[in-house]
Length: 198
Ligand SMILES: Cc1cc2nc3c(=O)[nH]c(=O)nc-3n(C[C@H](O)[C@H](O)[C@H](O)COP(=O)(O)O)c2cc1C
Image (cartoon, rainbow, N blue to C red; front, side):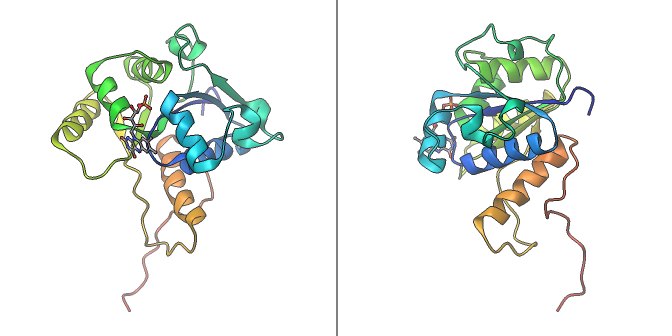
C-alpha cells in the first residue's frame, strides 16, 4: 500500500454493516478512510445501523476517528473529486443499482460518482460491491460495461463454507474479500482449506 488511503463510497443499497466494518478494519490497519455517502446511503446507515449523523466518531468510534474523513457528497470541489488526490483504491459498499448505472453511463452528479469515475480514469482499483436481487438485463449490462472499464464487480454475497455462526461472521467474510481486492492484509476468516468429504 503506497499512500495509506482508501476512498469509500456508501450508497443506498442494503448492507450498511459491511461499510461500517470495512471502515473499521481500514482504520485498525492505520489506513485513512475517505468516505462519501449518498443521501440514500445516509438513510440506510440510519435504518440498518442507527447512525443518525454520518461523522467519523459514529462510523468507527472515538479511538480511530482521526483516520476518517467524511466528505460532503454534494461537494465536487472535495479533494477526492480530483485525480491529483493520490490513493490506493476505492470501494463502493454497498453499491446501489442507481449508482452503478450512473457510473456505467459516465454520469458524475455526486461526489461518490465523481470519485469513482476519477478512480477509473486514473487506472486505480475500483471495487463495486453491488447489492440487489434479482438482477435484470440493465444491471448485467452495466456490470459488463464497468468491468470492461477496469472496475472489479464484487456482489455482496457471503459464502457459507466457513460455517458462519452469526451475522457478524457473515459480514466479516464479505469484508475480508473486499480487503483482499484492495490489497490489504487482514486476519478475517475467509480462507477455505480443503478437507476430505464426509
Ligand atoms: C430501505 C431501502 C433499501 C434499498 N435497498 C436497495 C438495494 O439493496 N439495492 C439497490 O440497488 N437499491 C436499493 N434501494 C433503492 C436506492 O436507495 C435508490 O435507487 C436510490 O436512488 C439510490 O441512490 P444512490 O445510488 O444515490 O444512493 C433501497 C432503498 C431503500 C429506501
